[in-house]
Length: 253
Image: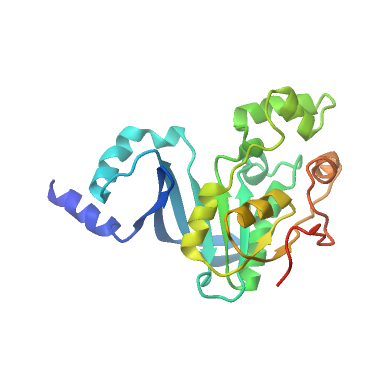
């Protein structure tokens, strides 16, 4: 090992954390300072990213050696933006946000994802403590970007979001929140308030043993382009309405 490698190891040894997760392992890197332009103001977040591995690499040196050979640019890695002291704060807002290439990056009006991304970040900042988990393998409810593009063609020919996925051989919603929840547990053990309309996210937290204090609905940016999409979310995917009806999923503390 040369001097450069030793310097790199010293810089990273306190920044990379191993999270055992059953037969696999999750590597969490951070914290990293992340100033973000949010509604015209620069807000200081702290950024982390994680990588799931099928084997446990014994040390930082081994992990670094494999990075350049793993071709991770061809895969997707998730990350989390943290604001404030989410470990000790009595109340903390959490958002599990599924990547949406078209909505988050291009600003597409076919969905409300871009609006939800920025709005949830603003709500976390206004609240003072929280985290936004950006889940990179959740594109198109877990079917991937290419399959989502094909599903869009079906939607342009009369199919709704659910039927388009089903016609292509997928389930309505293939997303899994297990890894994100494992990372969340490293930050916080106290109850969380989830920013969501999706009861499956609440159920995933409960099944993982997390305590939920409440739910913050996140509806908005309704237009002629996404009205059918939003209606399908409620009528066929069971998304909760803006009145905060949680349908008995949990008892508010």
